[in-house]
Length: 146
Length: 146
DNA sequence: CAAATTAATGTGTATATACACGTATTTGCT
DNA sequence: AGCAAATACGTGTATATACACATTAATTTG
Image (cartoon, rainbow over all chains, first blue to last red; front, side, top):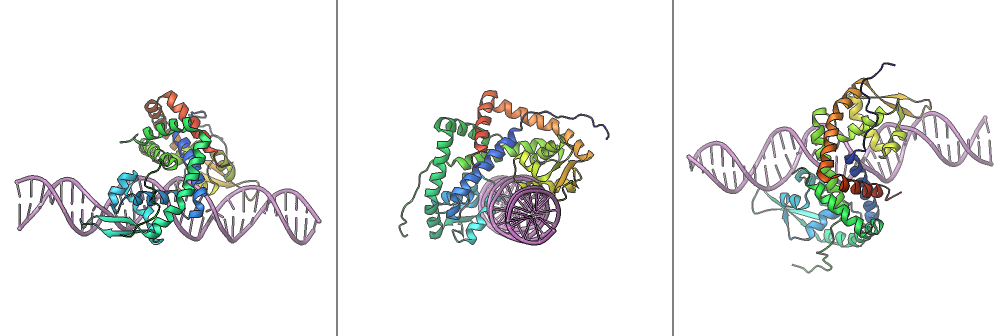
């Protein structure tokens, strides 16, 4: 076997992987708890945001939720197909307004108690203090790029 | 407009969304820094893990990296196509062994300095103490489901 | 040894994420 | 008015993630 130069066998753990892993685990936990509602956590949050307003333009919603505009567009599709959300034209004929349907509202109400459970479980698991500290760091990280 | 029952207008911030958002931000940061290498952070980590061993069975690698087995399978494909990784049959004719190619090793070495930079930036941004505290919480969260 | 289990993988399907492009409108400026 | 720049969106493409199934090979059992 030929000898290879520069083998960086040891290294510190990658912070990016660590947060991605934790994110996956937390996501899976929430998904499991939310499962009876038929909603993914992303979908839940989308409905949740729509519930706060009469209707909202796509890009405004994306900005509010701090997700990519095109990701929002894609994430909306299953909800549209399921009839939980509708889209109407805005005054500005470029913009489109998303809004919750009755079914969407019902689904949200239905999911709320489950979400509460997941939320509470997590708070219980980490403890108030550690969770608060974590959230603080997370909010710092969120603006890492800007 | 018809009156809707139970409008949960106010709620605590969703911990799941928070960590997902932070995860996205950190990922985008690493991706941007790694960009010149042509590797995504997921791909970097895959190569990094393969660099530690001669060859390794799929499921073992997945377990080591703590990612879903099928996700690993999919994530491997771009690397196979790019010729950075190859797969050979294992002794057990069910299992398949993944291994780094020379090109894969080169790509890894090339990306290492970039990754170091991203890693250092993050440490600088949060500070050693806060980062350590964060990592501790993240590792707890990672085993939330088991 | 034959049958039932378990183990190791791959694929179908669906969602999530985001960059690069392309399109249609609106605004702002001359 | 006319045109350039900025806005608001959607889509193509590629990767990431993971559950449900299907397949094949090795193991354990009766």
